[in-house]
Image (cartoon, rainbow, N blue to C red):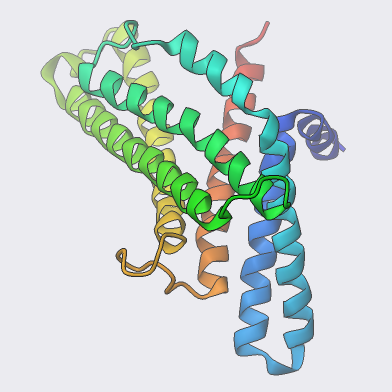
Length: 241
């Protein structure tokens, strides 16, 4: 009953609902792709699952029409990241915010072109939005990798081996953050693999992924995101009075 209540509570929020739609969509693509390619007798079911995946993806695209303002507020609040101690992380975060901010209007134009609202070529705008998404993911990979290396170095330093309660508390917090950054790194790498696949052919492995592999990468990324959200909520409940 507690799990059901938690799921209902998550679905009341936009982010929680988006995570569920994303996970369900990629799972449908993974299962549908496997059925179409490996089980000819179940290809009709696989085709239906792929169609459901496409509709769920379209649903998320429509919902993202309203994300610009939230992204702008976040970008404005972060600014140049003056509160960030690490200059390299700050620079990567600022560039990532710019890429994310530009991503949304480009995707909106692409969607509007497909919907015949704007008389433009949607393919170019889809490529541009995908490239911006890929750039943001690449910057996120670099940021997480750098943070993991810095935390690892910090944990191995002589001052981190002191037995004082404060040091143990800091070590525990550093380890928790390092685990979180590793999960973020893996999630971004899985999404980056798909982003490159959706770029024009000739760019690395663009266009070479079968549907089931796209679904697998997306499912891995989505499940990691859900896991991190659950862990964050659990830590918040544990820390509340």
